[in-house]
Length: 303
Image (cartoon, rainbow, N blue to C red):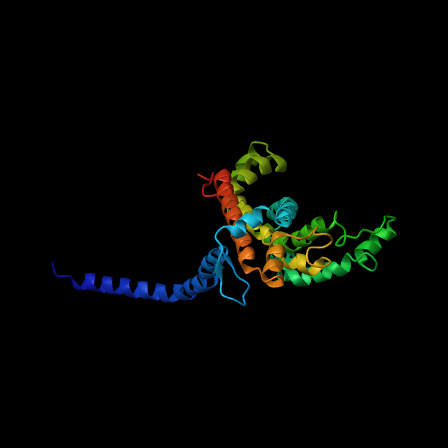
């Protein structure tokens, strides 16, 4: 049947809207294809080859993966990375949650939010260099304070026992404000009348936190945990700048990303580095899926 003028105008408007949407999406889509999808596919392919950048890639099958399974340095790097992730996620999540709850319950000051976010504006490299000075065993102000208090000086970034906890706390300092603001936004979405009803029933602040804030914050907290876990597994720059040598001392800070970088650009073993990258991608994918399902990140308890 022939279309009416109104139908033709609607169809034309729909096509124009679709074209406009495509124009706006095109830059992001191009960036995704060029800087994410293509490197990922290329890396998966290189993981099955022997490639040193100077000669064409030579097919090697599963040799790189067999080598990875038998590589004690790889497993040591994975263990170091897991240690870092547990410390970073544990301390950062608890601290960020406390900050977010205090901001919600005590003040709505925009200035305070800006102050909380300030460390996140500092790059990881700058933060690593600054804390390298602060925690220096001989002249760092951190050890000067310990000495003035009567404690022994600690080689925070130069000892096997302290290097990973120190790096983790550096990154906690930098990211905790951003994480707190994400959680604060989630707390702001909880209806105020829920708290008012709880107060009428005689609930205190602690009880309201455990029975109202934390359960209703679960979807946001789950997404924040997924983001921070993925970011923690990719730690590189702070370790590279703040520690003594690549992975020092004695590979105590040799996180997986640093080992991948050293294998690729230090030893030109791009095939093996790609295999480790693919393994890291698989680990992160599995962890993310488990986190998403266990925390029910796609569901909310708000009616």
